[in-house]
Image (cartoon, rainbow, N blue to C red; front, side, top):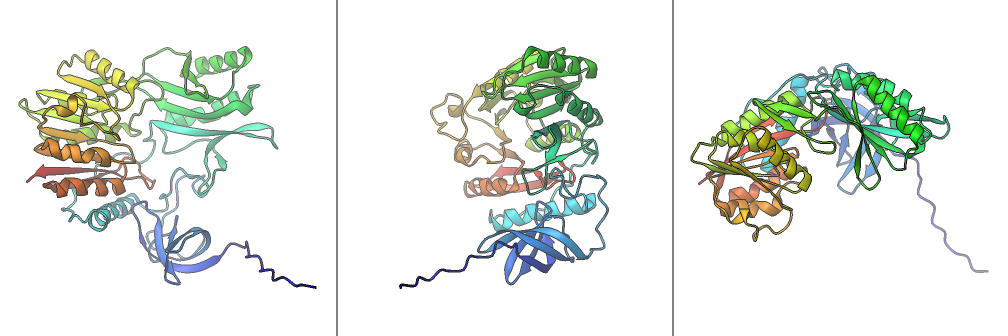
Length: 440
């Protein structure tokens, strides 16, 4: 009888290791080495001896989950949020704000020099503000619990898609945080609980606006419950269907925010910066660095609803804003009208595609500002160089793509003359930064 070799099954038991953390990356994630391999671990600080469980093991590196801090660092502090150890919203509350900023600054410089091959200048002072109750925008996860037969509301668990149910959040604007408990109570009364997706809460100047994702068709009873909830809480409420269509269920006001003496209106689903005071400081710094005069024509790429465009229009001869979302282009045009600005034009364009044939792309510009999303602006950087503006200000929410895209400017004859960090997202691993390039 023939015998066949059967290899033993690999153990599915997670690997547990102990090592020393050496440094932090720009996300405030600890980095150490174990058996020659780099280990990334959230919640650990340089100098700490830790025990951890491997989550994702690659050839050159691995991600691990912290299980025990054997030897705590002297600068470790107690988190101020009761949900911190589980919730994935914040990842740096165990570190003081100055240390968070220092880690992010060091990571920013390292990315420019290592990834971008660009010598970073001495960094500008960090733009800072309040570190609690600062978020005016959030997305709450909603999940129907089959076992408990109830709807849970909260944020995603750290390193998981599971939900952590919360009663409040100390980094949210207080009116948003206070809405979580009554929202949960309302949603648990709906017949269509299983068809809920998520809820976006936005603090506008006029009040709170909520966008509720609903993948089904709520019946009249559920609609009445939601309208009654909105009225009782004094909020505007919109439903977003599975096909992304947005329906106003209870609308009283046109949401807007103030910026440099301007009023910028927005709609459910529009992007606005989560931190209002830092947005004010960011726009002021960008305008100062760009230094537009009444002789200058400025190009604002990824302009959104006009967050930079409209303040720039008051300094420059003319500003052209370009945005990929047609609805936001229309909002930017309306914002120009409502603020009496007649020297700003707006165009819709996919800035990840070929823009050479577009009318605005054939115009000349003295200055360029760009504020792309996390993927960056690599596809348009070559065209920026061809425009040959005197100065370029690049605002970024992803230092990796900023460092990458900066290479194109430097190779095109530009110098990096100013670089700084904005503490837009305290207690998280997110990093907002700004760079100024000058020609020649």
